[in-house]
Image (tube, rainbow, N blue to C red; front, side, top):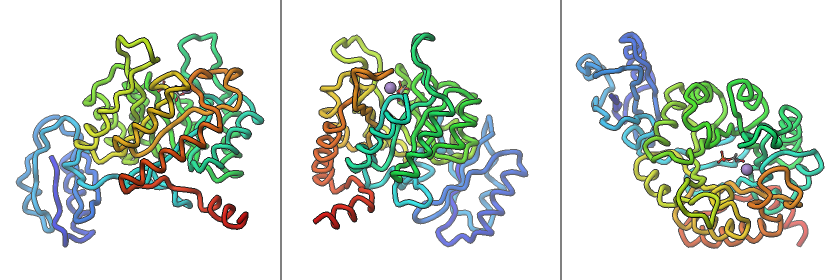
Length: 353
Ligand code: PEP
Ligand code: MN
């Protein structure tokens, strides 16, 4: 059920409707739109009796949401969600294309700083790096843990890059939330419902990767888990799914981008690194992702990929990142969109002239 407030409704009227919903034993989610506030109702297993809400001051209409996902749906919010980062003008969603780049895992301070410097110089606003790695083998590199998070916090200080890093369970989420700007939930955890609920109570945006065999509806339902707990800053990510194709590690399903955008207001970005598993396919698929309308890219970069402790084969070289960003910028321009650049870089370029 969704309560659509009138455009002229006051804050008190919105609050009164929320209180009423609570008194009925449900949870209200007030979601502001460009024209009016919509209030999603969750916590109800059956139909909510709309009568008492319809008559309240400021209420435009009470409508049934027939889809299983509600808060992620465009029915609740027609405008695109833009995830913003306090203290910066970096954003994910809307007309800007966000570039998130960095190594698969943080391996040492030297490695992370060397790559971060190049990521920053390439014009990206976000740095990725795993401190907790979900690996197929228990004997593979599992990540540096908190020491890795500390290195990324230093990278944020040094380069002004926002930090994107994965939490693999409730304990690591606690720690990741303290250090990161975006909490990544990996493909293997897309249906870890207790972790999704915990992420929904976090105060940081969540990057939710599509499970390797998840349908569009399952991806949206996973996002709904996070939002139903009150965290509305969710970014979806296509990272490839399992198919019979063996020329790539996964099959990057770019058609999910417009499919998501039709149904949901949430931003969706694309990971061409895990989506292909091969360095030489990352840039072509990054270009395609932007052409198809993705809100951003998350790309693995390494200065010495042959020595990488994880995902070296799909990590591009820093020079290749420069090319990728420059090509993507040109494709974005055709679509009336732009790749946001750090104002610090623009200044540095101007003073170098
Ligand atoms: C990663 O981003 O390094 C990662 C493990 O991704 P995914 O969950 O998509 O496999
Ligand atoms: Mn990886």
